[in-house]
Image (tube, rainbow, N blue to C red; front, side):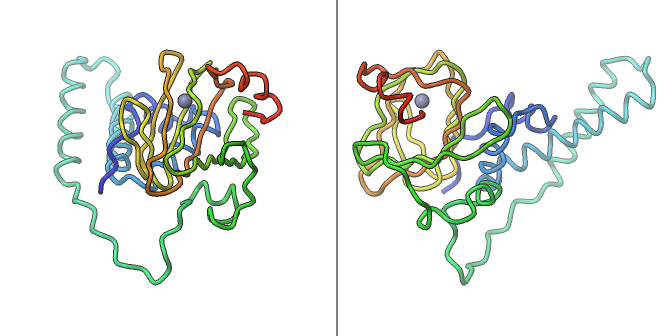
Length: 222
Ligand code: ZN
């Protein structure tokens, strides 16, 4: 099944321009590894960027309408010639839960990791990042169980790697990327058939509704 929740245009543009901090970039790049549609969109953005640079060289006084039309034409042509990705051949080795580039940060696949308990059957693995901006972790939510209801002090990206969850608004499965900000309050609940493993990137502590969780939050480091 194809990925239902793709990276937003805004985030993809920031990724393409190299302006994202390392933590966000890991989430976007790992989503791209799992989503051919998003990779095709990135290729279009990069082609459009190249075209714009060429136009600056050709004639700075060129009428903007003409310039825009010429860029659209090139963009449409590049999309028309783009072929559908071929289905990958079955491989001898099983598909890893954690693809690159995230895999390199962890050094191994999900079933060989040293998970740390978060309470109520949930586990996490903090991932060391040097951008000084984001907090990155792998989360394992037990099948059928919720992440406590919370809102966000900043941006939160959640990329599903295994299993699925429903956050009260939509369902997210492998490859899906959820983008949340201060305006969203949600309670992701893992679907019943298996534990849900996801990558979570934040730039501010989550705001839990539960007073108890707010108290233990600094101890857990979430
Ligand atoms: Zn959240």
